[in-house]
Amino acid sequence: MKECCTSVSLGTRGSHSITAGAFLVTEARYAPNSVLPRHFHERTIVAVTLGGRWDSAPGGTRLDLGPGDLRIEPRGDAHVNHFGRTGAHVLVMQPDPDAVDLLEPCRPLLGTPQQFRVAAATRAAWRITRELSTPDSLSRLGIESAALELLAAASREVPIRAGQPRWLPRVIDHMHAHFLDNPTIADLSRVGGVHPAHFTREFRRVSRIAPALYLRRLRVEWAAQQLRDTTSAISEISCASGFSDQSHFTRVFGRAMGVSPAAYRRRSISSVGRVSCVGWGL
Image (cartoon, rainbow, N blue to C red; front, side):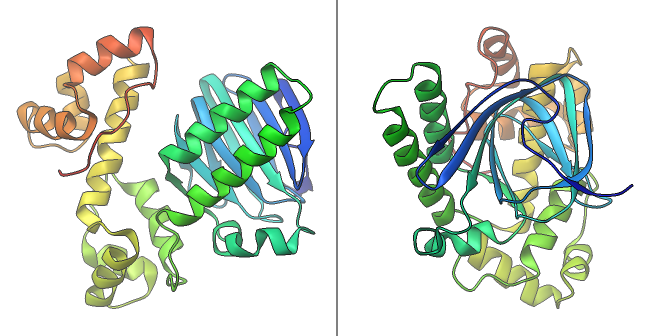
């Protein structure tokens, strides 16, 4: 299929855009079960998922995104997007590529396709949506300020670090796509094209977390999504998440999320996605 350049409002069932300083900012709501065929954007995409689920498929790998996930798609990178059964609510920032001096400190962030979570970036995204919903004469200033704060917070966090290996984003994308498959260190180092010892050392240096702990974090986040969005039994979710038994799953989930799986599900009925990770000492 031929690639085309598209606006981020394509395929939405409602969007609101504003230019604030060096940023084109769009709050978009994408229709349930919709697909955007292979396309690219003239500007880099900095997208924060506020609700629902969607994915980005730059190639054969589909990278799942849920509430709190931040996705970077560099300009010109072709991809396909799929939206979940409830659609998706996404805040999209597109920095002006001509604002070279302003964006130079964020170049490592904006130049590499990747995704991760940064609480401060998510808070900034919600502030932008509030400015969009109740605009006044200072809204553009407020949006530009929050956009800069979002970029600064994202640029300070994993997996962005000075001296990041070129192979690391490729491995992280693979981990996000295969976290339920029990990959070995040999598997992951092979994806990066480096020696297993070098992979383990560099991954921990840059991400400040061991590969196994990173994968376990992804599994807990996936399990949380299953608790929010499905009626599957907790025992079934535990098994599907790769935990040895339900009691082990409950302990790990409780340490990561601050509540038990059952309590998380009860809270999510009235407040989807508002229970956040309190720690990853898994």
